[in-house]
Amino acid sequence: MGGHSHWSQIKRQKGGNDVKRGMAFTRLSREISVAVREGGPDASMNPRLRLAIDKAKAENMPSDTIKRAVERGGPGDASMLEEITFEGYGPGGVGILIQTVTDNRNRTVSSHRQALNRNGGNLGETGTVAWQFESRGVINIEPGGVDPDELALTTIDAGAEDVQIAGDYVEVITGPTDLDKVRRALVDAGLKVTSAELSMVPKNSVPLDAKHAGSTLRLLDVIEEIEVVQKVYCNADFPESALLEYAAS
Image 1 (cartoon, helix red, strand yellow):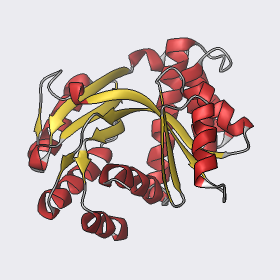
Image 2 (tube, rainbow, N blue to C red):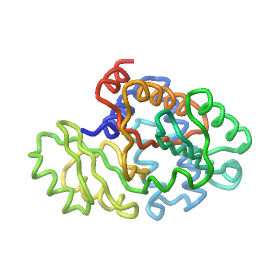
Image 3 (cartoon, rainbow, N blue to C red):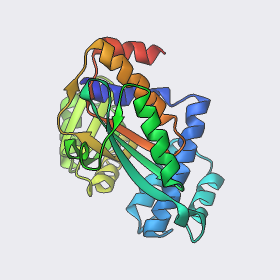
Image 4 (tube, helix red, strand yellow):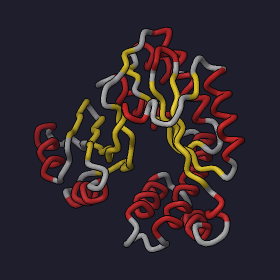
């Protein structure tokens, strides 16, 4: 498995502790509220909201919490929220995209600049990093003992652009507008979907040595702890040794 995909897998595994789960609930609630503001409260007519609610349920978010997040998407609190994507560089020249939802732009800019500067990175101008990524749907499924070749054919038949299989890790890539359609097709085919979301996938990865890999992983953790951060993407290709150390931390 590539060092970038493995990092994404480890992030999901590390998100299971109580502190990370609490942060995930906060981020999911914001995503639900913003999705309602942008496309309305009817999940059957709002793909972004449908995906956000499905993800919240997969994370075992209580139904009352989901309901409150939907209600907050109406006139009021959600109108104060702003979606801002920051672009920057980390150790070794790695490109980093940071998606945020905030009600205070100036404070958010300051906190991100500080986090990057203190950890070997720097905040870039709009457009300096984004061109290195492309929007794609990313679906993770559990193979459940299905033959890898059969699994690959099933995902392609469902409309996927690509699939990566490494043991129990299966990552399916779709076009950004095909995410929900492919997810539904995979579920209908009897496969267990563990996550499905729009993602910014790097066009090319930047290989890092052990020193820069460790610094970059620490920086990404610092960024993800900022309250308003929704998602963080990078184009680093991490060496296996650095990822194993990170997973054990």
